[in-house]
Length: 74
Image 1: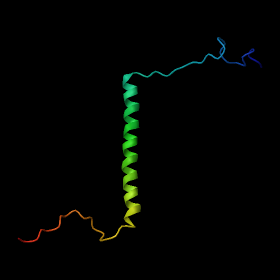
Image 2 (image 1 turned 30 degrees about the horizontal axis):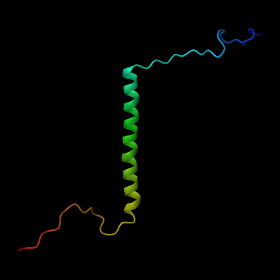
Image 3 (image 1 turned 60 degrees about the horizontal axis):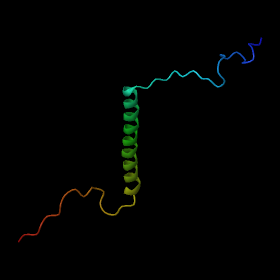
Image 4 (image 1 turned 90 degrees about the horizontal axis):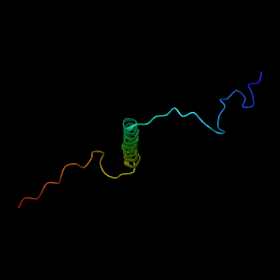
């Protein structure tokens, strides 16, 4: 069964589409926050992964050098 020249689609202007998206300030803020959070998470993941990969090739002890060397007595 054929539904006319448009093949069953809604008739009207040629190329007309039905848009059901609505973006207000809250939606835009949510999208921007999600993108920023994803970028920050990806940056932290990349930093940790890079340290894990390059840690294999580092010289020295396994403990991180967080303590300052002791000064000589005067």
